[in-house]
Image (cartoon, rainbow, N blue to C red):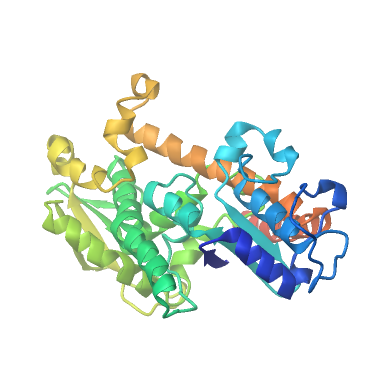
Length: 364
């Protein structure tokens, strides 16, 4: 996905709509918000409403905030859970490009606390900043995002993946020996990270997504090296804080049928007995790096603590957030992209997903 991060979404939509009106689905006039601002028809191909009112409409649906000025009344009738699960993205789908627009504070809300686990989940994987703007305004915005990414989002992703793997008693791809060392290849660790943002996604259940997507995100050419560059420095920080883990070169032979790699596979080994016997001191190292809303102190204040273990609660919370954000984006997409574009896009996704699923079942 191509994501444009902006400080003011309404200002962006107003300028972008004037320059690229064909990128937007323009709703009928009766769907537009009432506005007291004078009409300004200059620069747009849709003289039935003003650019400013259109920008208000786009922003209102992007952020799904009924409190915003001139919000479409329909937003108020959406379930509160759907509005609260909205990750704040506005996707434009054209014949040549699909790009999303997000306001900085909405992105930071997700990256720092996994409120939606939507863009935060995408940023668990290697990303490529396309523009490096030098103005002090953009520098401040970029620094905020990078700091949240490095200090919160990536450490939380690795810690969550290690907690998930450490809870597996008889992992299929782990090597357990008499020294209680539990070992996984870095491919498994990184794939577990990549899967975090797909837990609970209804599109997976509807075969609208590639069931091997997380695996491909890690095993595509060059990706292993990129994941290693992202997470090995964070792993070393965990080790320095007392987490009983070591990273060694893998002794396994490379699978000749696997995707090309630009770096050798490694094994991540940790003392599983230490995790069990010293849970409060050892696992707390991982738990400390989770987002605030997923930490044990939050869990202890919920009624779920009476029926779910802490780690089961984390899994259910992540699945719920992913499910709600995926539903919110899908519902919103019908409005923002327009029924025709949304239908065509959904058909392409379903066709692609079913094609992959059929290949999977054929192999089996």
